[in-house]
Image 1 (cartoon, helix red, strand yellow):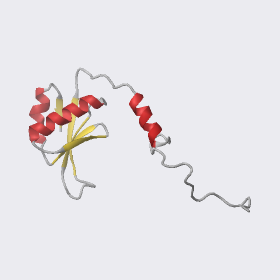
Image 2 (cartoon, rainbow, N blue to C red; image 1 turned 180 degrees about the vertical axis):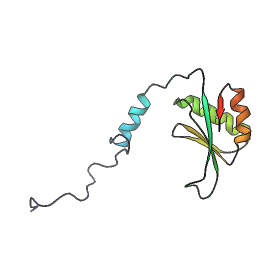
Image 3 (cartoon, rainbow, N blue to C red; image 1 turned 90 degrees about the vertical axis):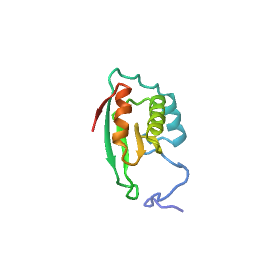
Image 4 (cartoon, rainbow, N blue to C red; image 1 turned 120 degrees about the vertical axis):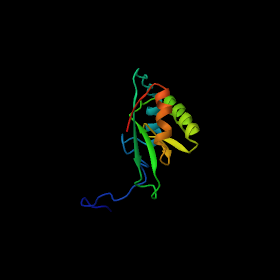
Length: 118
């Protein structure tokens, strides 16, 4: 009974689609897990910045410019959270720590041999 002039408005047959690659989320995660971790460079430059947008007025310190290696980022995040006594997470290839803890992070990163900017 559908005429040739009708168009599909909504369908549940496709399900969710990944924003970045267009695949279903389960396939996208499989592709990400099969990816090899990048090797750590000899010189790492860590960039510190503060953000407040989208967090209900709360400040967050972001350590960016780090290698895209999940195990490395997770270990670094744990070390920084212990050194600062604050919470945090790894998101989008950067470490996010709650509050303005830039002055506590700098010595820790410098002791690990990183160049720190910001």
